[in-house]
Length: 315
Image (cartoon, rainbow, N blue to C red):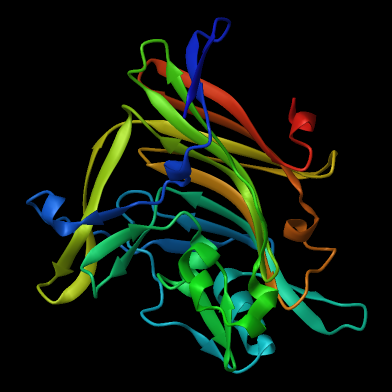
């Protein structure tokens, strides 16, 4: 249940609660789609100047995310690490003996991204670009014959008893909705610290709630035969997110992203590996402080979220 509180000083209505759907992930089927097909462009993954930095640009209709059509397979962890360094501009981390143990980095995502499930003729909103790129709609990949589950919500039921290393250690989340006084405009906000043994990620995201900009995204056939994402966008907005990452109460670094006419925007770090490096930000982060803004025309809302081990340190 959501709790409502009035912020007198801010002149806004704050709705606080653990909302399962605030992760901005949803599925939309073609029967409810608009009648006019507008094929989306492919999402662009832009490596940053620094190794480890990646921008996922889905603005201006680039909603079709380039995910694998079947689970990816790698002969070894080293082969996967090479793939991640090439495709995701990832940092390679090693143990004390210089042996590779994982890859990771920082991701900014501008706008929501969608995957195609051609078997069900459905599109699926994917809140995590790393899971989407590596695991697709399946949420897992293979190293040799071993199934590596990145998101147990998608593939946890496929793990065998021998795959205990992929089971959930902790999955946390804090979700909030910020609205103007009469609730004609609302922004969604979340911060999260998610720790699985193989995959670790943390960050903050801002999404569009009531008013502002929205996209109706749905399954279609591009050129009459290619499974694709089509969409209709309407409205206007500007969203921003700022995430401060901490190890306990000690700040590690901060990251900020903003964009206009988008459904959501996100900053996150990530790590995938056969062992977690103490040098990787995603392995060190256990507290995230998020600051979120949203506006449409003269309407402006803002607020803060916090998650992890020491959320009170964000105040």
